Length: 169
Image (cartoon, rainbow, N blue to C red; front, side):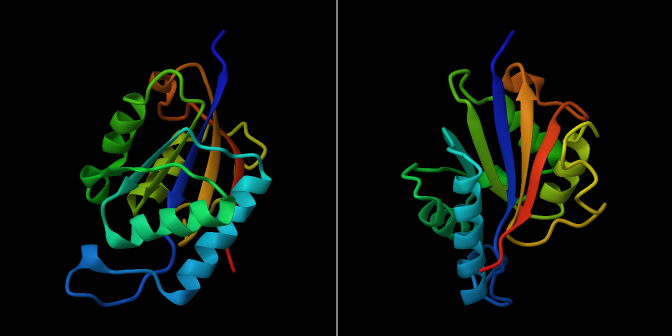
């Protein structure tokens, strides 16, 4: 039997409303505080990522920075341009490409994709199942899923939702 893995799905923290382009929007002060708070919570929950996939947008890269700072992680993320505009299938494709030796993966992306992905993955059997309202996945939210098997086993209705947290600083 394969070891249990963790998949953590994170929506970026609160961003400024305006910038020269959407991809250039940076975090607000509240977003930086919330992201650090979420990082502290994840570290307290024992989450230590081996791989982090982060959208190339400024707000997701900055979310990773404050998340990692709050958690005390020293992991260079893999910045992925496709995460900015992909759908749930695109995120699953990325997760499926994860090396077998990785035990914990974090994906930092955007709504509506992150919200839809969380609903898609939940098998309804986890201790946090039902904690996330359909269509709602606020900024600085994290869903922690247990994955039994390989990264290829991350499929719709195939993961247990262990925890859900919204970071608020």
